[in-house]
Image 1 (tube, one colour):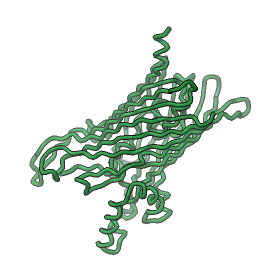
Image 2 (spheres, one colour):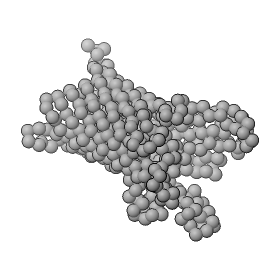
Image 3 (spheres, helix red, strand yellow):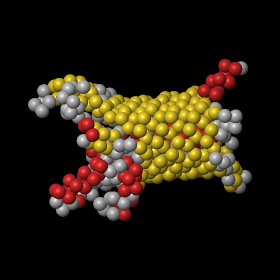
Image 4 (cartoon, one colour):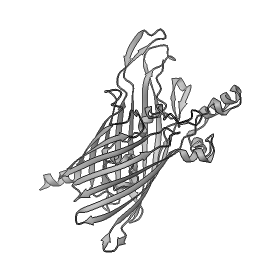
Length: 388
């Protein structure tokens, strides 16, 4: 029996007033690629395409590293996932970057994420225990970013993905089998410093086209799934409240660049549905990106439902103490994930600790009370300490 994770657990519930024929979330493979890894982005409503560069920009917008203030940094993040349901599912993420060259205009970056689904006991058709398995998903990526002008940078990232979700019946053995995939990100970041009155502010725009690549094939290729290709568009505005006190307001929209899986209810007969399903399975990932803008059964109205929004704010004192909050909204017909994020951060010399807490508004949401922790190190600052 093969275990396949095609969509987030977050889509498994819906409000009572949601009509079954309209509830049509987009399904993908390797959904762990869409989970926010760091505490700062999570506490601001799952966003970071246009916020100030930090060590975890690899997930949000790699091009931001070209504007990073420090020469190098490393961070590790940990998220106990679905803690209201189980206690052994978690996401761990390691990120880092290093600015290269003498002009301080370019950077290389990398990250690795490991998503463990805990221990699962598999059974045969008669309900008899067979074995204990530990499905997981892992991805490793490297990136490069460069300033193209004083205000604009672009970046790319290449990613290898491995998803091992259980046993395969195709081999006739009980050996674990996995599926591999490759993807790339293309991103851009623009920032400027307008004067409002006597105050110098900061306004930024950012975009990231992520997970553009191959499909992932489970069950010997019989169950191909699209990667969670995504388009992020964000903006952020920072203004001083007083000396050492700054406030950032940000907003972001993102959309999965994945075609909707055909449903039997949208076709007149079984034959038409099976043909549409086969066409969907045979569709390339690049074709699927363009198809994702016009394939919703409900037309343009449903296409708009697929856009997710988030807003957030961050208060900082002297870049040493931070308070954050945000809200993430997904249409009730496309997954119904709605939650508030709260968080705080403390920076001391070369070490920074961030924490985030999620409060879901949807009733009985398994994402409620999700915690995240991120520990970051300013490697350039550490080097300077030893050189003194």
